[in-house]
Length: 633
Image (cartoon, one colour):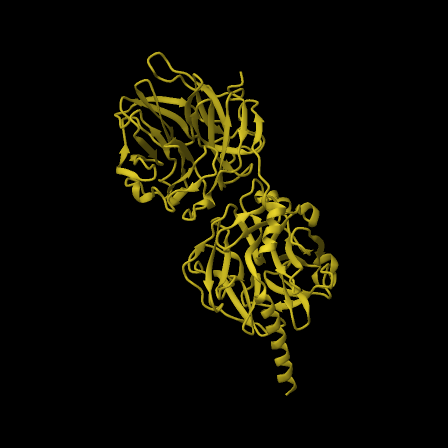
């Protein structure tokens, strides 16, 4: 009888707490996250905020810059996996985050947690916990302390903080927990084991519904030898935060049965709806997606994508009121990132970031330069998540504009790769044709050459299916656009095989059949570019590997072309090259990339350069002389 009365009291307390939360007039959402596509790992591992009115379309606050400096709030200099919670009194807010800097320490020991508290969402007090130092008797051997989260326990009227722990020389990944003290500056007692999944678990998120606590986490399945054979989002349930927890061995995410990996699951309820959102980070492919549920047991099977102007990693969402939404906008929403100015000192023309795959557009007295963006120095592969735009009126003084386009602006681009593109102006608009590795060629549009640009189609313009003579996955890349004297627009593209087609007047549809370009001596690798001088058409392109730039000439854009030879040799310290050729203020320029920034430049950390291009009397092009002085002569 006593047990029955106690159970009724507990359920009543929980129901009152849930009803209070439901009665709050929420009109928006706040997303706390760390970034996955910043210019460096150091800048990625910082706390950021984004807002939304529908939980689907998101806008980064503070221009996707950190709202707090990790050096100030953490021991390591980095934070990951931020979790945000509205306090039980509705007027306080709590955050916890992994105290970890992979930029400084890699994936080595990180036993720390950052605790933050606020009364207004804009000013935060912080504290730090180091389990191995603060609780040496139990956690001296703690190696990883990952993805902390917090939830209010209405039974004891305290905030429970829970997290994954891995000890040295032990592969087990278990959840531990402890109640926070009254001022949310530490633990009341030594953390204790909370839940042990059969094959380990990380990235837990607990949500309460209808008398049951649901713990969502990244779990896995191992064979009899302990080898992982499957992983994805799973859940365990309990009637109490103290357990016991019942593990479900069913995977909830849509990717558990293939090689696409997910982590960082987080669940929240939509305002004025019975639906819940289960969102997760597809970290290996650079995407963030979600599925829906009404009962937290069964979820829609087709994943959906958010619309956003940032690239989140593991984060969390809370509902916010209109007043809170406006407060956040007042604090961080009206900051306008301004263009930045640089003076070129020669080649490479920019040394503050790594740029590649140039394309150029001339309008009146301005040259617009569009580039890809290799995110870090010394990269071991292509990490390209957005594109850049610069302008100049004298080839020496340059203006860099805010990021005009990101790969996440194309939800269909599941490759997550922001490869080479080309911008052209027509009919008062500007069209940016981009490649995405194996997801195809897309097109974005803007009213201004500096952007911002938006996906014009919602799907690829061209895919590998259009590359009829190719069998490899990256055949559909490197678009190049040319508008002929009669107004007809053409698109050339390809890797190993060169394709071309007409574009319709609307610039977003192919007009007629796709054709393949072939001629004697044509050893095509990639990076086609078409330009015209007098009555001659010039096709330049990358050939062989490591790549050189070769060229051919014709009397018609469709050929026949006559091979003319190598235009420039292998660009220093880079296996690839990619060129643009333009005439600007009476002079011709050859724009390309190399790996010339020392000491971390290379084949995957490239830099755009410019040298003069000159013609012989008969119209052929003189070999390009690559230089460090460039056009600053």
